[in-house]
Length: 302
Image 1 (cartoon, rainbow, N blue to C red):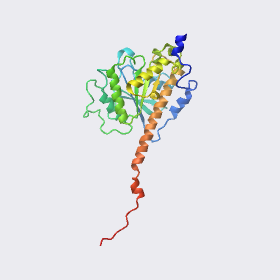
Image 2 (cartoon, helix red, strand yellow; image 1 turned 180 degrees about the vertical axis):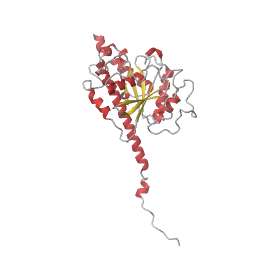
Image 3 (cartoon, rainbow, N blue to C red; image 1 turned 180 degrees about the horizontal axis):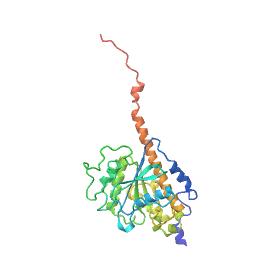
Image 4 (spheres, rainbow, N blue to C red; image 1 turned 45 degrees about the vertical axis):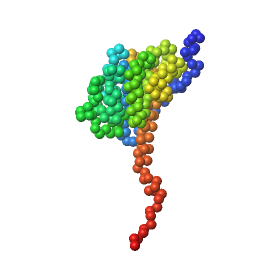
């Protein structure tokens, strides 16, 4: 019993409203970018088999109120299932969709998987829907899937790194380095970044029995710290979740963690939009010298 107490904190180090998931659910349902027609694009990347497609399916299941598996996912042992650049829209009504989309890509690997340069091109909106990733070469600029003139809606607004908590300790250093390289490029593009820590129920038996202990379990906090130190994503941008993978009915606690992560992703994307809009407004203002300095008096040349 004393050993168990050392593994569990006396109180949660991060608060989450387990009893009222409807608040976060309504927040997501009410979300609407200020600019008409603006689309929040969320790009998922990470090691093969980490649960990118399963996270997309889990989000869709929570928002639709039933199990949904539009994004095809493989089991843990069969590696990366996603081969093409795919956009997933989530239906909100009979003929409407949520104003955010998820993009899924091929998983990262030490020697195989998606090229870092292809992820960078995707962030810039230069990869067209349906492009089949080549693990041996980057996407050719002269090819039919290269978008030479991306619009704002084509570009990525939030980058999400999906990591398997169960295999975090043994992650290959080359894969770690690729994640860091992608993060550096995203920072250069001013794209906010989030990490999703999946399969947390496989790491701790305490969580497997009671998901609400996720923020009381020292082991999970240490896993998050470990990943934060390895790639540089701050702790307040890392969210542990449990994806739906074997369940046939929704679970309130699973939903609460997914909605907490999704709400924060949306907030970061909205901050990105507001920052870009502010920069754009400032660039249209006349320089201060032009506003404040009076015109010189007219002088007649002798």
